[in-house]
Image (cartoon, rainbow over all chains, first blue to last red):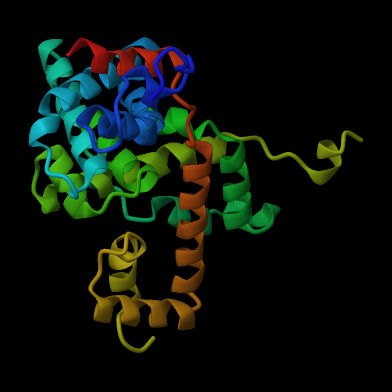
Length: 212
Length: 77
């Protein structure tokens, strides 16, 4: 590396080092996972400043532990585990407890069942299509972030981040059965919220849509 | 419907979508979904819904200042 010619925003050059050195490896991890971790942090904290703090804290802890990180293992899952632990610690410190919500009376594929059985939607056309169209216009992100912490985390890690049940179990430090229970409850609650939205959305006829 | 009853398919559909069923169970379920007029649309709906959720929650990139704050960690320790 030539001294004095380091480009201002080239992260690998921020810390003069060669690939294979811990700092270069770590900088590569930051590049690879920063956006994903920030997106998840934002959905967990529901607040940009808090999300930034959470991600910074996560990488700080990760860098401190980096020497003992086993190379070749799943770095992304490792980072998410640190993120989740940090997040859980922060809300425990704030004296908040996970919300208790009963989603057990809802069925799996709640939304499909409600849509499929809706006489009102059937009069307007294909109920499933109508519901999916309305959800395209819905604030799905708001519906997701309205879920209780535990369920929200499971849904984010599975449906948005694509982790396997086993990985989520490791990230959250809970058994796989607990992951499945939280994930499925979370999905049912999310579908319920989306159904409430879709049902309340006013029917707009094709004529109205074109403005005549 | 032959094979798995529809109720069982509904119960296992999410695990199937999550690719968490073993190969034999996944094959059996996929076969049922292909052939069953009740379960086919249900599965299609779930797949489309998940794609919409992913798309709508695609998120935003981390702010540049966060990137800089994080990379500054490397210099401090």
